[in-house]
Amino acid sequence: MTEKERTEYFKILTLEAKLIKQKYKTLGTGRSGKLNQWSGYIPLKNQTAYVSLYIPKNFPNEPPVIKVRGTRTNFNEELDILKNWRRGYHITDVLDALREYLERRRVDDRITKRLAEELQRMKEVSRTLLTGSEFVSIGIRRDTPSLREYSLRVTFSRYSRPKFRGRSITVRITLPEEYPTTKPEIEVSSGEEDMNLKIENYLENMQPLRTWSRDNYISEIALSLLKFFDNLAPPTCPICLSKITKEEQGDAAQCRNPKCQSIYHSRCLEAWIRQGYKKECVVCGKPI
Ligand SMILES: [Zn+2]
Ligand SMILES: [Zn+2]
Image 1: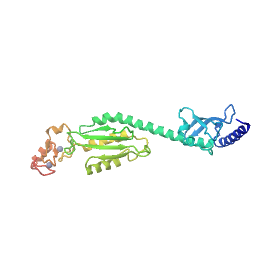
Image 2: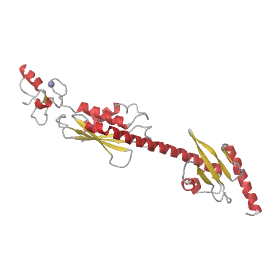
Image 3: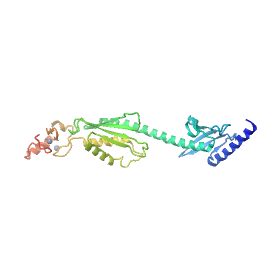
Image 4: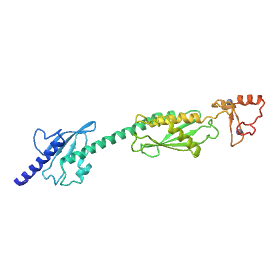
């Protein structure tokens, strides 16, 4: 370095030092007092990061070298301002960009953690859902490695309402970009328009979707869906209007009209006939 270069370098460092002291008061030159080495904490939202930086001799032709304690990130390859370096930039511009980068990464880390937690909770409830009830069970599937997409396959058992038997409904849960600030998106495909509407209508009003907050998890929605389908799935006796359990189905009577297939408690049907009514289905009028 010639005398002239040395003077020029000192002049540049003095200007940079002035700017740094104005905007980043927490940074210092350390014990050496050299104006080409700075370190200290920079503020982030709810947190700080310890930064060390070195200003090379041919600055500003060359960018500074940045290190952050606790990370092995090569910021000269990560930060756009360092990658596309221009002579007009100052150290404070680099620090501004670094702060923004670190804050964004913290948010990313938080989201990744949250998505992993969602997966864990889904795994925890999966056995309960799969065991389900005597009428319905729900299997959780992930068709892609994404932690943002789940599909729930709702399967009706042979004890469920005749019109549901053997059928399955798919409920897709997608976690949007802004999740968990915004609620998950839910899509139902049952192959039947009115069924889709019925389920969607229920979902709109169901907790926790109605008053969604970041304290809620999709595993709660999955459990709530199980309850919903468990209420919907059992056959109902058209006479007494109550559920017909798996046990009661052993001696239950069923309408033979394939389009109707209504199921009756045998005791209800017998009482009905004793009262003088014909042995006809009260729903479709065909003989039972
Ligand atoms: Zn009955
Ligand atoms: Zn009938």
